[in-house]
Length: 90
Image 1 (spheres, rainbow, N blue to C red):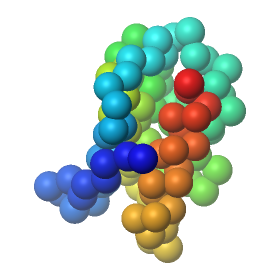
Image 2: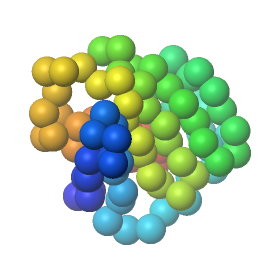
Image 3: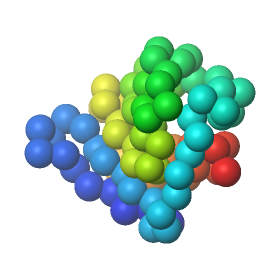
């Protein structure tokens, strides 16, 4: 389960895992490649573009920030996408 909130800009969603986690992003390159096109990668944040054109940032502390999501996506679809990301990085 994840915590989902609309950011102040109302154009992005922030997702936080229920349990604290740490992702060694540089070591998870193969998993990141399976999630979409990696636009940027540092030890602290990875920026990706998904198959539906969505852009999202994954932070090493487990936070995910969804930007440029398809207008048809619901909060349930954002939650599912986040859970898929967490599963891939586990």
